Length: 460
Ligand code: XIL
Image (cartoon, rainbow, N blue to C red; front, side, top):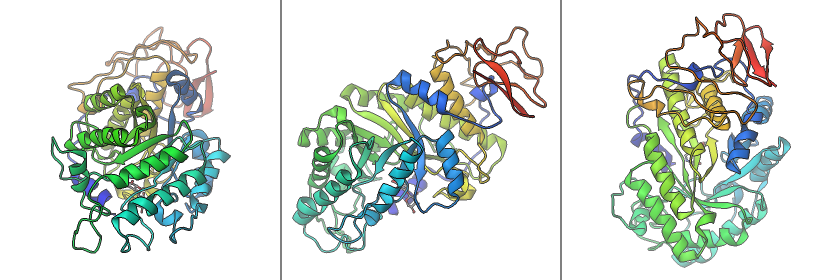
């Protein structure tokens, strides 16, 4: 568990004053009512070729009925939060035990969701027989290949992507380091023993190459094989490390670049320095795209610590920026929200780090995520970097319909108390309800339908 907690330490957990932000939900996109992403995710998928938006699930999670509902209507892609890790999948050496991992996959299948694999190699959450006192050649030549083969073969070809190695790059890396130096900087098994002495065990990247060679041999033909890490995404030295590592993996395994991916975990904080800018993400994704490598947001959560409205709006802005960075990149096809609900979050309820509150109700970030998806599906231009605050970014909504809605052009000064004459609300926008003073006219092909006394929506 060392790695994840270092992540929190580096992305400072103290939450500072939140800047005022402009959001799509301020511009006619729904900010209340129930959310159903099925239509919009289908439209996004049609535009991007493929796109997977989801969250974590384990068979032992409580509140199964809430999970059933949310993975039918909002999250449509499943990652086992813990059930596919080494301690769960090979509790005794050489004995593959995929019950929890397969259970999460069956849950995905039951609700027609897709499934991604996390993970085949990690220094953390290892079974009790590891690290043991195995030699470097046993680790690289037998233990890793056997485990990777059993898991990847056992889970079948439909897995969209596998985190083949998780958190192998150090936190103290600096620019110009070789990929070997980046990995040695981690200072964790198997480049050092875990006997407390820090004695080098595996002295090169052979353990990573072995994992990838095996994964490539046994994964489905369309499954992406990822290096997954935290505190990455922008201009950090650690990001350069994961890109260098991907190049080393390609050079040493001959796996085509277009089968490789970099997973950006994105465990963030809503505070200055607690996340990467949209432009920095775009630049990194484009560097990977030039190589033919996919980028993916694999474990997004954002600590805000208090459920005050400005915090939640800031959280929504950061979430929206990361989602946009993925949507508008040509090589980003997966976006995973780590833990589906605040009280289930590994970062603790108080962090309020997810899209749904402890009662299971959507937070502003959930509505904003829905709006970003809808804007993209509508052919709308990419919004400016909302997390940078209103002094830099005021959204103007533009776009033409590809999903049955017409263009809604909203100026940043539009007030809900005086709906503009001749306004038209796009599909899924609010058009009525108690207290609603905004636009009541729906775009062609949609009608204003009452969902509850407080919320009517333009639907087909
Ligand atoms: C976390 C899970 O969310 C927790 O339930 C578990 O106790 C510890 O691991 N990086 C990763 C994930 O790659 O596997 C971690 O998940 C969070 C940090």
